[in-house]
Length: 119
Image (tube, rainbow, N blue to C red; front, side, top):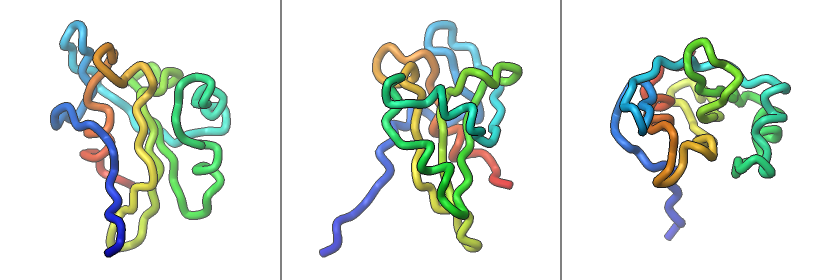
């Protein structure tokens, strides 16, 4: 039997924005394409788990970031995906290191990616 694969992402709750875990404020988000400058901020030394530089180099793969509106410098999470015509294939989804665990700053990052329309 083939080994089953799954996306290992904790879903806090379904929301179309991220929520500050301290204040409870709902923050509107932007989804933007990742640039080569962004790659300097998302390294293993800074707590990120995946090779986003490699994802950005893949043919037919789009890499996007989730940011708070009017604050595109701070990346809340990233996702890479491919448009397969009849479906979207998600390669990777990752929260920013400060959005993981009991002391996370924001919740709702993975769900926000999954609920957004893809252009």
